[in-house]
Length: 238
Image 1 (cartoon, rainbow, N blue to C red):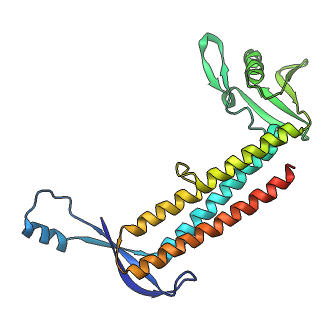
Image 2 (cartoon, rainbow, N blue to C red; image 1 turned 120 degrees about the horizontal axis):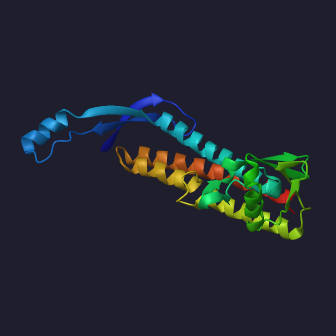
Image 3 (cartoon, rainbow, N blue to C red; image 1 turned 90 degrees about the vertical axis):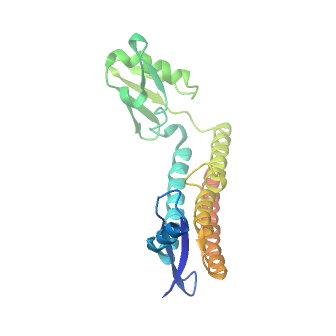
């Protein structure tokens, strides 16, 4: 697949002109001769891609990355007060069966001081308690004497050690969203994907360089937003 520039006078803040790309879809025939190749060239289907829209799409993807990062930051800051804290647990049921925590119980936060766990089947209550204790979260579920399906989990006061653990998680999360190429939502991954698209273009080197510069500007802009969000969250954990 080959991409070519088609000149257009649309404007955008990134560049003075916004050319479009012509994406060519070649014939899938194999083993042709020169005459056939020439015929295939004539039969190519051209799809125009507006670079202004390409940049807008890239900007939207960078914005979504920051939005997802902020959601993950909220979860880290909530720590043990997060109702989703048990969602990754596997519950050992009868007959050697295993189930996800969400399939056998539901957790809610009460007043910021404790969690309540509602077990759907009273026969699974002991297994849910065992799974929570085995997770080493320093949380001790207590059964309600009047309701065998209800557990109360008192939340301990935040300690320096716990805050340090949260801060470490926050730093790792920030690095992941900035530089991890194996994270499809990271800024580095997005930058790499769009630069790869641009490298596949056959056109003016000056125009290509401008578009690459625009992508780099977006990367730096949202990397700054990521750093600002981290600094703001870091203050709350110190």
